[in-house]
Image (tube, rainbow, N blue to C red):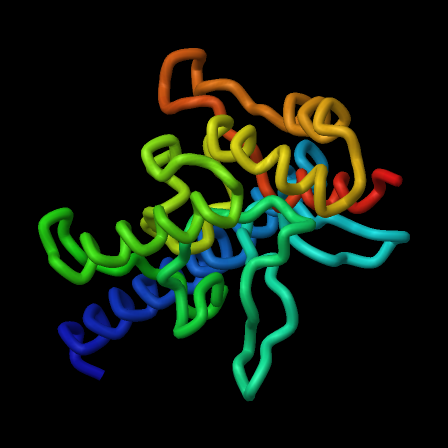
Length: 209
């Protein structure tokens, strides 16, 4: 075999060995190591931040969802259920909060379709919660970038307290206290605003009697 050919083969075999070694290290070893560290240090988050009811997973605190009445006349979902705190609007999927279709509406602030939708949502939320339209928070009428955001503002949660309390036959003070228990502060103390995770809040709300 010519010397040049042997040299070429030798270099190719060395490259192939390096490829296999780094494939094992970066493609198998590193992911398994990080997964193991995450599972040991943050087991709840590493397993999807699942919310369980009697040991059975019922939701994830990372993914928002609708809280609506049963659909009618062939519709998948019905109107919002007054017994639950409502999330912000969602553009994910055809009916909203579709985890397989995470997306925003991609409508600009001056788009007439969005402007009309915001006005309609503000009127609907105001009537549903029994408040003035000008007091409805922004997040009650605008969707998040992912369409799956489980958080709402403290203002929107507080606005819904009286309606939820009436629908469930609870005192407003009891429901307001539950909201206060679920308020998370600003990131790093100054980024964003106080928020409330609607999925976690409604899960604990179901336990109130």
